[in-house]
Image (cartoon, rainbow over all chains, first blue to last red):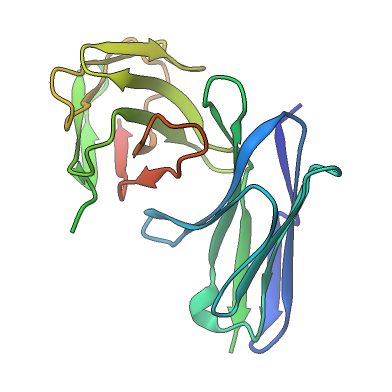
Length: 109
Length: 113
């Protein structure tokens, strides 16, 4: 069983739609990360959070520590949002990172 | 600007040859990591290093070797013992403080034929 599970695996949306990607984890964590991987392969960090909610532009990340669940929302989606979004956690024992398998998002104009 | 540089971006090798992937960071991070990414799978940890001259095996270390002679550099050698070396390899770094974010390089795509 993976320590981090994401859903959906693949997502296609029309430009302008509101998008939600979900992440559940099974280990104790000190932080949860949302990462973005573009077709070229490089990965950038979008959010790191340990409680509550964070917002950057059209992106919002929330976490519920009791339920071990996080969501990434994209408002007013745009084709340039097309990428793979990866949820990762830092365990609270030994500073290890665990990664979900990613959600491939395609936004159609 | 600080960051992580991986080179080359694409690498082609014949089966049976060792190959070394470069990773350099100027973020002054103590911890560095090598991950392997395959289609449909999450990133898997190959090796990590928390400090110069020390490193530990990750989940899939067999067929790989690393060195950490300098804080900035963490090269990965894919040896001929690695049975399925064709993959996308990502190097990352972080502070050792718990909960610090990971910074990634742009990756090296290795193809072995």
